[in-house]
Image 1 (cartoon, rainbow, N blue to C red):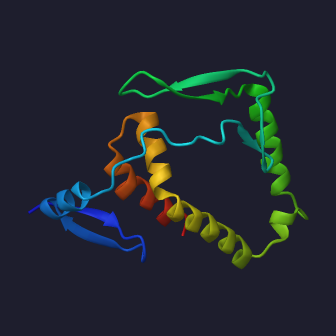
Image 2 (cartoon, helix red, strand yellow; image 1 turned 90 degrees about the horizontal axis):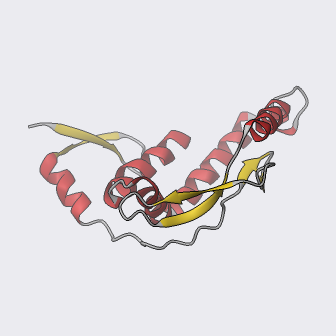
Length: 151
């Protein structure tokens, strides 16, 4: 029997699931929201959402239907330079992030993981719409995997 491994949400441990068990689990997944609200379409630089310096956007399409999902800010080299500069500043000696201890950084990463767990269905719907991945895979594999990486 071949086994697949998935991360459990609660413990982050790997557990073996036989194909039949996995198929039952995935078949019972909720149906996706095919029209989720998309709130953030700007670039995230220096801890804030900003428009691309050029003002350009691009349309992201649902690969299954070819229909537009949203218009997203289109970064260019100027935006990348600003993001790199902000990241370097965040790690400079004496910066707030650099001065924070590991426990606080861990708290923040776990808070992000908690928010992702809360919004797992929304994140999975966006992932499915944007790249054509089956919703149940995004919901039961990709999102929990991302959460486990943060924890």
